Amino acid sequence: MQIQLNINGKKETKEIPPWHTLLHALRDGFKLKGTKTYCNSGICGACTVLVDGEPVSSCIMLAAQVDGKEITTIEGVATEQGLHPIQQAFVDNQGLQCGYCTPGMVLLTKTLLEENPRPSREEIARYLGGNICRCTGYARIVESVIAAAEAMTPEQK
Image (cartoon, rainbow, N blue to C red; front, side):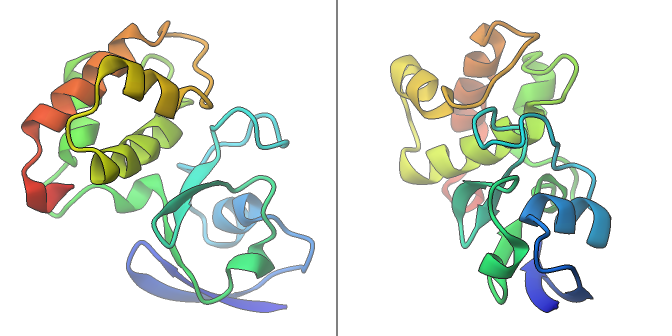
C-alpha cells in the first residue's frame, strides 16, 4: 500500500506492506534510523516519535494508521543552527550514555516542555517514567530536562 507522511516537515510517499509498523516504515522505508527498536510491545519508549505532536510508540502502531499525518522523529528536532536546546542540554548534562533511549527521551521532553515550560523534578520523572534507560539511572536525564527548560525561549518550546 502507498502511504504519505509529513516527516520532519517534508512530505514523503512510499509503498509499504500493510502490516508494517510505523517503526519499520520509518527505519526501513524512509531510512530514518534515529528511532530505535527494542521491546516491540510499546513499553520501553525507545521507538517514541511524535504523531501530530503527540508521543506514540511507533513499534505498535501500523504505518497505515498515520497516513497523511505529521510525524516528528529525532532527526527533525535539530535546527539549521545546530542541536535543539533539549539535545544540547542532554549532551551538556550527560543525560545520555549509550544513547539508545535518548531519541525517545528528547521527544518526550519536547512535548513535556510544550505542555509545562517549568516542570518540577517529580513531574519530569512521572512524564518520562515510561521510557526505560538502562545506563544513566535517570538523575542526569532529569537534570538535562531542567537545564533545557531553563535554556529554551518560548519560541523554541
